[in-house]
Length: 215
Image (cartoon, rainbow, N blue to C red; front, side, top):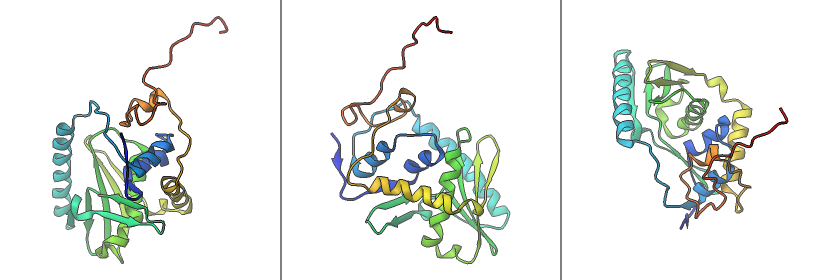
């Protein structure tokens, strides 16, 4: 069974899928933020992902070095922000590249392009200046590098009041004493790693097709 955390803890990617509209279950965010739990195993091939991600990341770093950037990778870019409520937000951008004029926050993606990828980089851009003194005074932007060779630019202008308000509202939900309502559906539950014993409403089967003469 799940065990209560000592405090509220949110990993960046738990919140960005909700921001992008790719997930709707705010309860899952609240549960993960407030509990440690035995995850449901999935079919994700971690070893394959790590290998592909390392190749893409190393190639990106080589390109940035050739362009004259100084580069920091993954663990060097740890973000840990504590709200007044005590809730912790944590994340780790793949790459931060800095030259004399600008700082670029970069994430490498081995899968298809998703809106949540952009939201993820924007969250990094919002908080990295607070944790990385080298970024101060530099023009800040983001980039997403995909295995396909595509590069997506993430403009600093996207860090507007609407983005900050949306992010803040979800962090508030994660920090509440009581959970939000669940919104279970097979389309979302099948990708969720919270077991049915911790979420009895979890939907494990597809909706049955019902014959009709109405149309």
